[in-house]
Image (cartoon, rainbow, N blue to C red; front, side, top):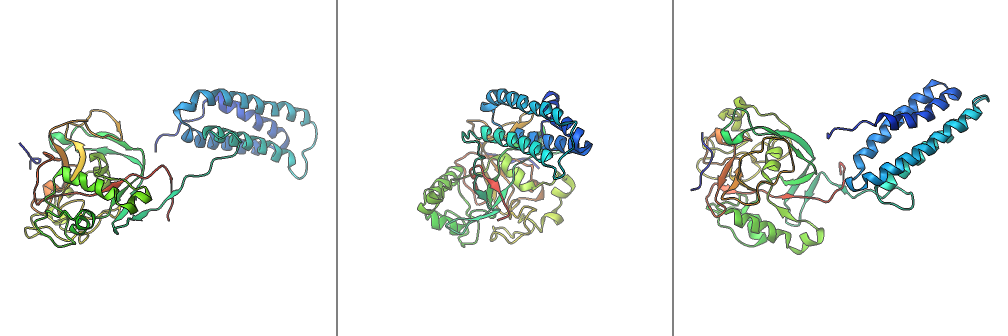
Length: 369
């Protein structure tokens, strides 16, 4: 029986022994250029370790640990060389300092090259930049959602909204600014089962299976294949993360009809039907109709929440019901809370049910482009 619900990454500090090894350089330099040199090298050492730790991969750890030890021994030799010079005056042009700094930076560069698998000692080229917004061949708009962590669920919600748990979204992803519309359905495969047919209205009366098939059909269009874009439904965690847009759970606000009226079409203001997408206020990340208008299918099978922290949760591999989120034009405000979970059979169909697309890009550098 179908049913709907009732009423930065921590940075790892440099291990003390490794930091001490590099600070040997600073000690020698302090003899010649004053204590300020040691402070500068110490700060550079910490920053370099943070950068390298963020980039290293699990597979390379063993090899890199051995190579680091060898390189730190090499750097320790600087102390002996500088000790021999300690009795002489420092060059007026600071050449001794620059030579030591260059040696340290060269070692850092070799570390980065090793992490990237480079054999020529040169840093690898950067990944292509990800634009903040993307428009596909059909004119569908997407915004980039950055990776991050949040507390999923609600302590004051229904039983299946608990326990609250920490979720990490480890990679950025694109989310469609609007729900899929009838116009999109016509352009992709001509399938428009909606009760209300205007092009600007959300595509509704679609089953989960039909929503998934739409993703496949859009991904198969020549222009989308050429661009390397593969579309899918959001995971439940991605959906809640995007809907909340960095905000905390607030039951007094989430259940308030007066507040909801500006951001969602519900049973108080929708006049018994769907409305054109994008007419209400967007959330803080520029997404429209995340709450209200139509329920949105998610990729997950419905199941109880885990008790501990999770990373990029996908839900169980099998189940009887698929998750849907966000409420619709036919439901009151309490059904539009960002944490509330709906669930139905994947073959269920209704005029309150539609969907929104997401797109996972390759690993890349995010820019403001």
